[in-house]
Amino acid sequence: MSEPVTKVLLSEDEMPTQWYNVIPDLPSPPPPALHPGTLQPAGPDDFAPLFPMALIMQEVSQDRYVDIPGGVIDVYRLWRPSPLFRARRLEQLLDTPARIYYKYEGVSPSGSHKTNTSVPQAYYNHQEGITKLTTETGAGQWGTALAFATAQYGMECEVWQVAASYRSKPYRRTMMQVWGATVHPSPSEVTEYGRSLLAQNPDHPGSLGIAISEAVAMAVADPNTRYALGSVLNHVLMHQTIIGEEALLQLGKLGEVPDVLVGCTGGGSNFGGLAFPFLREKLAGTMNPTIRCVEPAACPSLTKGEYRYDFGDTAGMTPLMKMHTLGHDFIPDPIHAGGLRYHGMSPLVSHIYELGLCEAIAIPQRECFAAALQFARTQGIVPAPEPTHAIAAAVREALACKESGEEKVILTALCGHGHLDLAAYEAYLSGTMVDLDLSEEAVADAMSRVPVIAG
Ligand SMILES: *Cc1c(COP(=O)(O)O)cnc(C)c1O
Image 1 (cartoon, protein in one colour):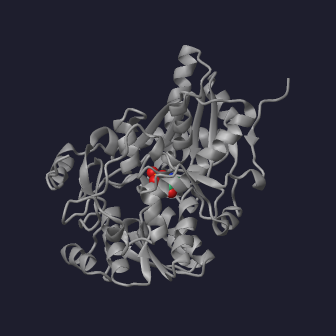
Image 2 (cartoon, protein in one colour):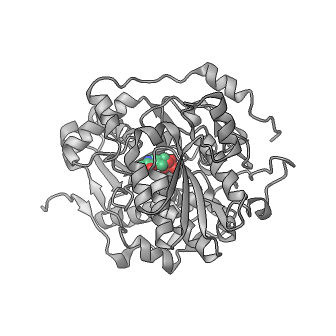
Image 3 (cartoon, helix red, strand yellow):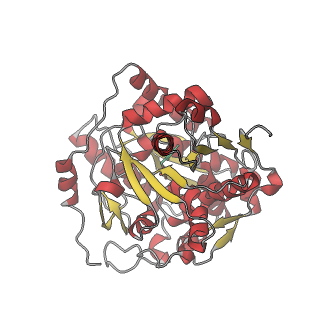
């Protein structure tokens, strides 16, 4: 008998050439975004100051597949197809009969899955003559991904980095600057909203919602500038489906079918990217995996938030989206998984959760880092703080299999490495990391300011 496989690689020719849009396959469509003034469904014109028309059309597309442009494939080939690993050494450590597979997106230039969407977003803007993109970044992964992508098409990039992260993660900022981006701490002196917040608190730690407000304000003020969002929206999740499409091919080569799929959810993009092609197969009846979202206990929008219309940003400038939310001005505690500190959830993932097509659990950060150490010490890769949540969920599942004796196939996305997040590991190793409980009062307070909308 041959040795069990350690990794499955695809050749460049085997790379999928289409993204998958799950919406036409769902039993009902997700509720539309609403214009915040009229409360009518937002139309393409409402988004035109923010996004290029090609992406707006993808946002509302009913096509099941969208061709990946050649100009995007050329850049994807710098790191795609990405490897699928079997975590054999972790399985041995856990003494589990389960087989654990992880799709590794840390091989991208910026070290996370975010380049799967930053590249097409920059590409479509460039095609429409846009010369500059603005965005926010929390942990810094999205900002670096967009800085890399804009550099590929000779565009400018201006990033608002959440102040707490700007101060604690100088290397992420430097990386953005290496690729030619301009970086501001948020709140910043550059926008009126930022100035108003700094006037109240000069040491304001910032939040993703605030940084989005600042980046949006700058984009709408300049006709040659648009805004780019790294998660949450339908077109972002669609770009990420290349992860799941590749994983399907890779597991297929082994004759494996997943029983359980787990992914960490901040805005839902790496989860959706991995899960949606498998959800297509589940809806078609060719496999029946349990699909599970994993969120931080300190920012649990799916498991503790309400499903209702809310703003995507703190200042209330974006269209209203129906999603699981903790309230648009809820400021999550500063957990180490900065990319999971978002008050809302992708409307598409929220809808799929409401339909009962996926489950969700929340895990506190110390359990996540304990699992990450087991993973790093066996598999070698030091995970980003966000996917430690997915790893912890995979470990829970593998240990349940040890109890029951079931030989389940577990699949997850290791959506980024943690080489620029070592301070989080230091906090864990030195014993200073604490589990931050969600403040029910803070959520109730923020929810009291969510607009009340029928439907
Ligand atoms: C941004 C990010 C996340 C959270 O965003 P999702 O849209 O939920 O994927 C998770 N992990 C990594 C490595 C990230 O960069």
